[in-house]
Image (cartoon, rainbow, N blue to C red):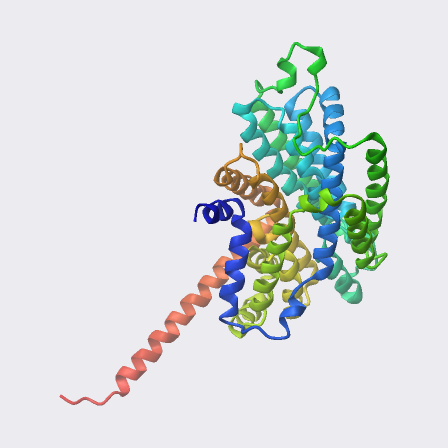
Length: 431
């Protein structure tokens, strides 16, 4: 019983995903269509990237980079700024998922050097900003995230959108990206002002021999020859995986190569892969797939979509993630540009609003210095501020949508009252 409680506490996200999947099965009985829910491409590429990142960390690549970063940047705000901007710009080219899988563990290692009493707030603040940066940075490019790839293809097919190539897409999303970058810089500046007296442990150590030494228990003491072999091999695998992300090669190629090589040459790394994250994705795929097959849910979406594409995409992303929301909502509207904006901004909301957000939460929830509730609260506060400052258009869309929904509710109540009045008038009088 104690072990079960410990597992649930440690893998809370996985447990929620499984529970949601099981509940949805009562509405849509399991059948042969369930297999189509599972995005095997996403799972395979995730496995590849997690294996590569785990290998680089075990070799000590992240430790070495962290030590170089600490030697060049003295201030905590400066370090956080570098970590956040890495996620923002890299996500444009390697997707938001890849950026977070790569740089969140790196951030955790670096900020593990903050004094223990201040470690939690810096880790929380940095990972939250990294998550926001990856989600918002990725929206500039069609290859930045899966929903952009899907909706970009739809926009190109429709001549009325005047989207004939990648540059048209970039010009359309550029204002949102610029505002996002300004907000991120503002967040880092505020953190630096509020916690200006916080320092790194190594800055307080007088022993030069220990200066800039990062402690990472994940590092394995490999022989030098093996270490070089793994760096070269997994570096090549990383490039191949990126080609799979960009649809240049089939995803099964890097999956087989990495699994076979790791099984033969480095079995210890396969043990360190986060299989619970893969299980979480499977549970969410089943839940999302079943939602799309519930007639009442689909009918409700169709009735509220027209003229409300942005806010509907934002809200739908909160319960089913922005990628499935894009695929589902595209069937009910021709305003694809509005869906592009809505699904990208919608990914900032709940933990499941974007798979990238889920990845960050999984990493940060494993840290003993971090309270998951505090992380979620901090994340929510920053996202609310970002949403409000994002664009005047989005605020107006929200206001208009709320007014429109209110009018619909009021109209429904009036019709119901009229119907009840008529029923009462037609009823015979027995007195």
